[in-house]
Image 1: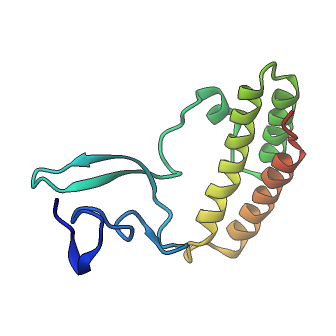
Image 2: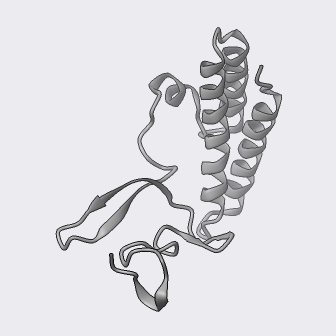
Length: 139
């Protein structure tokens, strides 16, 4: 077995830095789902972003960031859905979608090309979804 560079015990194709990890500190925000072999025979990670397609259509249709009022209505609807959910799995799904909405807005706020009004609106909407997620207590 090839020992890799510097006498490391990991094989040559494996690198924590390639996976986005360096020691205890994360280097990137990529989520490794699986691995594949590229055409040159190298092992590469398959990553997933938070901006991928919606996994649950009914939640994607409920969540909106168009306006503060619409976001408040959506958060109230999500809370009602959470409270009326019959299984813990569905509660977890709804809470994750709510947290993901707030995280997506946080990522959008890191962009520098937003106007002051848009930034304020997105901050208020992020707060709405964060508070809704905090109210969702799992059983």
